[in-house]
Length: 179
Image 1: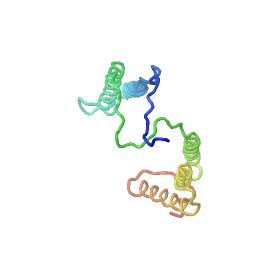
Image 2: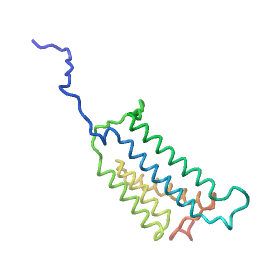
Image 3: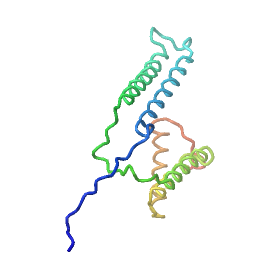
Image 4: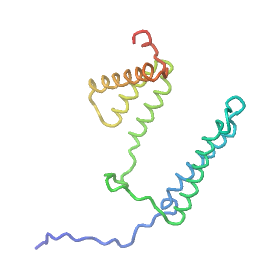
């Protein structure tokens, strides 16, 4: 006779994480430190002779931002090294043990790079439409009629919004005469 009572198996030994895996937030610290240093170096290279109109010149804001980035990276590194860990959000439904979906990641990256390569050749509306359709395809949508139409509409509307409303010129390509 079998029982329907669920038995919980107790782990024989807890899973041990490596040092780098348990301190993975240090990667963000390094990234923040690098961006802060880059901002500070670029701020130091800003010429001030033509734009100086008072005691606060064009270097002030970048120096403050770069200094704060460096400070935050150092404080975060100190917290991580003292054992602090970022808490997982309770609302996220993500399986952290699931493997990376390399196919989707590579498809998204490929369509993004294709957009960057084609934008000056065929214009923003066409290259963005290809990228939007490619992103929808990479993320699982397989409607071959609806997806390209929506991608084309979004890319043309985005191009019009940037060119006409914001005054930011984006390359139109062959559509310059049509739109």
